[in-house]
Length: 461
Image (cartoon, rainbow, N blue to C red; front, side, top):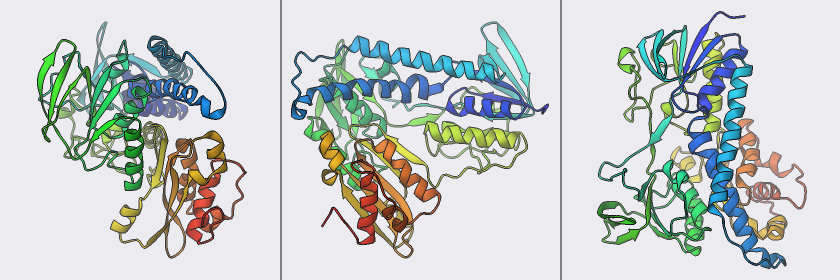
């Protein structure tokens, strides 16, 4: 057993995984959390939004049952029940995390942490103040929504991604400022519920971090569903705050009156009030804590993981960073590898991407080719009546290695992992294309895209 004392600040996905791994390695672990274990992901992000999406996707499926030969009448959403279900799932999973911490003998300290020096932290709890000393510290404090300074976030019509999950009723109209991942996911939640939605994005396309073909197709799908989208447009000001809504003016001259406005223009690292002035930590221009591939900060015995380091603001990345940091804190030599990290967007249809896009590969001077296969040519997608979308593989021209993949379509968030595995182990399109995939399945589309890149398409001309 190790006698190493590890302090972890923040019990979100990064922090609680780091705590469990450090405890497995024999450390005496103190995990400090000011709010609820599970962090943003479990309590105010990934899990609650996916719970609501499951409800609204089921609603859309039932409404489309007629084309599958099923007549259904009297369909209506029960928003109260949906929210109760969401809250129940979050509560159950939170208890599960608390049980894992207890089972691994992690000491959970509820309170707000502040560094006194490199090895000592003061925690303000409900009972008073407690001082904890450790040999190593892991910062996992997460992030928070960016609040635009000219907007009154205390007004009931103004929402963040977190307060939207506390709504008591379905808004009749919703202005979404920011058409990135969060904005598009909430559009997929409230669209089927009958909310009239307008989206405003300052970049020249929605989902600006994604492949251009993905962005274009998703925009077309959302517009087809009646969502009004303004790109290359900024929110200029709120001209009127009213009792039951507000009026916003865009820089293109448009005025939009809406019951609710969701502002989701990004997230910033949570570093305030932590006594970081007592440490010699390097921060980047956005305030993220700078780390190396071992998740080690400039302080050496202080590590940082999850959203507070920037980069991929994804729970599964935070999990891995937590493991790497914990292992290094206990004397191992672990390194993070970001090359095959999948990114999943739970819109309808889903999006799953990994590795390089075609444009990014070209920017890096890599000679590439692509293989693309539409779900409209997939027998399983046709049977499911979910034919929007495609699979695209980005392939190195010379040796056929798969460098990236983009999927938009049914179950894309599950399918993308085959491409992630291919990138991780440097597989080629020949190896994927010659691997027999079961028929009829959606995963066949990946094989077909590989065959297309080989110049040997079977179900495409």
